Image (tube, rainbow, N blue to C red; front, top):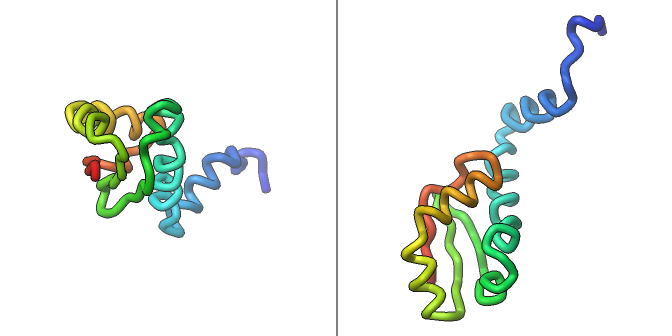
Length: 96
């Protein structure tokens, strides 16, 4: 390979993930795993069963007061989570 054709390994990995349709599932996995880091350990204690379907994050909350508080901040949470992952992964959050 000539030096002029050399590309960074990160770019090659991203291209491969896109070609194999693995980029979206990887970003979904990152978002679900980033919940505790974005929300903090206090809120993470009251959450269970995070899952993503059709760009909607489903979160089970064990505290009704916390559920109400998070519902009011839903759009900001969507933005924070997507920003943390670095991609538009979700468009909505449903609290159960």
